[in-house]
Image (cartoon, rainbow, N blue to C red; front, side, top):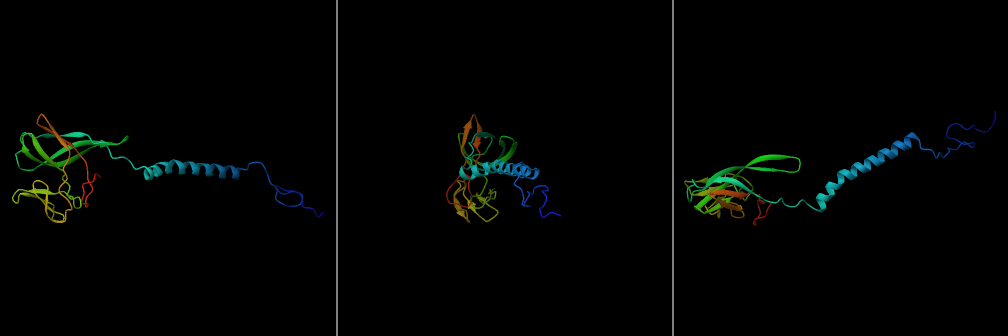
Length: 185
């Protein structure tokens, strides 16, 4: 028997592992999996980073028709519902919103968001008491939206609107609740 170890597989004449310059199946799959993982991370990470660095701008508002105000009584708040189309590039839906409308004259109205400025509950008009009441935490507002009781930090939020040929058009928007200033959400 000889003292030398015969070369088998990846061993040289001295018995040490041989460095093989050829690409093995294992090395190939390691590279492919590494590149695939990197590309997936990059593809999924870019929108996340963009959202952190540059948050989405506030959506441009547009007027939506709410309805005819000719038959509304003067000085008595009315809850009016309307459908508004919303969505993004892939998803579109019709959402039903409501607003409180107070008609002062045939050409003048005030439009309130139905969302309480305290924590976002929907308030109601109490015709017997002559004011708006929030059922959640007891905030009370005058017909002009001024806070007269409860924890609400600011008056009711008014919405941009316009009247055209007896029809009311509103720009629907939401505001942050629980803060003392009217800030668009």
